Image (cartoon, rainbow, N blue to C red; front, side, top):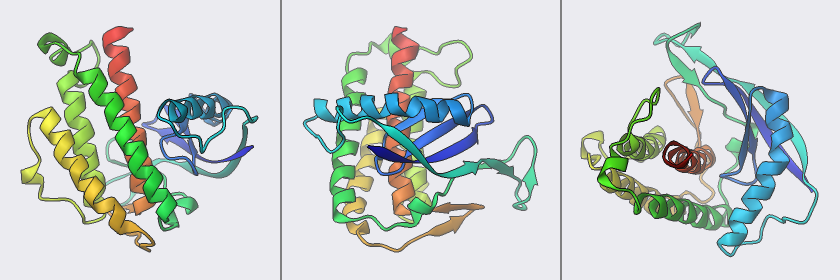
Amino acid sequence: MKYRIGVENNSEGIRSIAWMLDHPGCYAYGKDEAEAIANSPTSVRAYAEWLSHHGASWVSMQEETIPAVEQVWVNYVINQQFERVQGDGYEVEPFFEHDWKPLTDTDIERGMKLLAWSRADLLALLEKLTPDQWAYKKERERWDIAGIVNHIGSAEWWYMDRLGLAFPRADVPNEPLDRISKVRDLINSVLPTLKDVNQVVGLEGELWSPRKVLRRALWHERDHTEHIQKILFS
């Protein structure tokens, strides 16, 4: 089966990401575009196994996976005047043509399930941590574990803010578990209202839509759950 891919090059200036456009939360990394695409069949199979673990079967583990690149985007950096610059600034990340499409009933139903399963995986990991592990900061990492969890919640709040749907920033909790819980409650309450919403927002030099928000929220939590596992257990 062919899987439609959007490729994001120059992510954080160091890598490429192959996004499986029809399957939020499914992505593959590579040092460059070719490697990310080459790694995508393995990621699709792992994603299918993850779905199967949670009782879903809308991606098959048996069929051959054939990547079909639909669009390639190269990230770039802008300054406060929205001019492209080298070095420090705001990194503009991809808005694929697929992101223009309004969410359907199926997209929302599956998205709600995927968000719930991703959160369950994260909480299952966090509930085992000792206070020392919560405070552990590995060399060259930006945050300790508590900081990474806070970052997950902050990013989800920020995604909703891009659509003008977030509560005030001052109301974001400081405690990590409270933060991810309150922000996820917001997403869960808003997502069902976004069916067929033809909303694309341009903000601070970047385009956002409900489909892009769902794509990035699922990627971000799954990526950082794996990140925490690697920091603590590898």
